[in-house]
Length: 568
Image 1 (cartoon, rainbow, N blue to C red):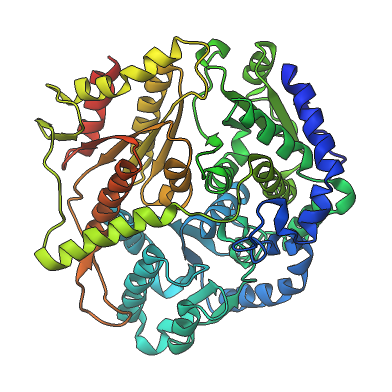
Image 2 (cartoon, rainbow, N blue to C red; image 1 turned 120 degrees about the horizontal axis):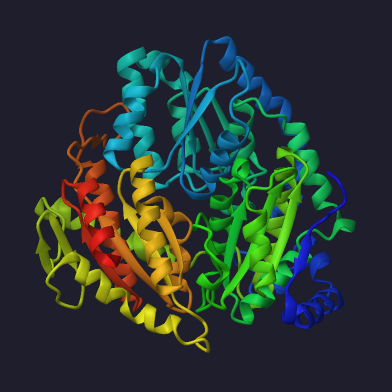
């Protein structure tokens, strides 16, 4: 890792940023963060003093490398060629970054990550993975994440059927906190290995702990090199994250609260990890910084005055240089971070964690809790309780039916396209007013099977909305986003407008009531539908504007109909 060559060009905001940086130095904020001083954020230490273990992860995890590598070597010797990590949010996003950025080194395990409860996704993994040669990593800090445990019970039963009950446990590895339900379950079922993580590390800050390093080792990454890069960034004299946090936090306070990420293609998956970190850490108490990942890069005049562009560029890659320079010349505040190679991501994990902690200090919030996440979970549990009682979910009546499309909104319309156009109309009006700040954003919440075809359709819809309204847009698959941007959606200032898209899977799969048992009282499809209904209710209870578009069994045709009729 070379000396930091990060470029900050924030224009007229520079004096404010410099004053903020001076105040950070005068108040010894960086030293206090490293010493575990909770008063950096709140007078109450709850959910702070027990969430700062990430500060020393780069050095703390070095002694654990030998044990991690030993487990991987044993798996290789036993003929394992594939791995499936089951996790949500902080337990799944860093492993996704590692797999898609570094690939799989020859002789190591081909890693997949499952974080969708859509039954078609579950069935697809069950069909594709060779059960006798697949290791399953069950990753959950709490040990009780409903999606993760549902995956586990299903694939444990599948493994029993293919390998026999006496061998099933050797296919499973747990990553969890000490004393969790999963630790007890893993011991009872004779898991191959249980990695007990530092309980003082929150999920979204866990990339450089067992939650990230075990999957990284499975695909053959050099853990020493990764932690070395992180350790260099974490060195006290580096002051890592202070300046980036000051820029992000100060510009958010000044109305530039849409942190728009531009990444070199080889490291593009890093954006999803940043998205979760920023959204879940800052979206609370009526405040929030919206991370915008994966948005199509348009001309500078397509953006409102609420953007901060951060370009993370791999040395030698020029893919986005022209667009980025155009934003800079147009007067948008910009940051450019250059990585010398892929392993510099180790340092970036730490830089962004520290920057988020600093931004939280500037916003006056606790960046380590997630007070609004529970609302959607409570609503989903209520939906499932109704299902257990009545045999069906409490579906509201649609506002209109348009062919195979059903629309749920507060304003009557003749077609689905007209309903969505009416829903978006206030945004177009706001875009024409240059003084409006903070500006709204549009979040597309897709409770659909994640596929490349669906990715492309959602991106097309997103770009058309962005072009028409000049608003920041995001796309998230449910229930994945509930563990990342879901906190921001319910905890920020309420400036989001939410387009929820659901469908009806043609196939469904039962979730075993317990590992090794054949009885099942709910299915993956029911769980997914309950989560969508629960999230919609939580958003509405919070005064958020929501429209639901149900595609029925015609997912592809329904999406195209929405795209063409909404914007034309």
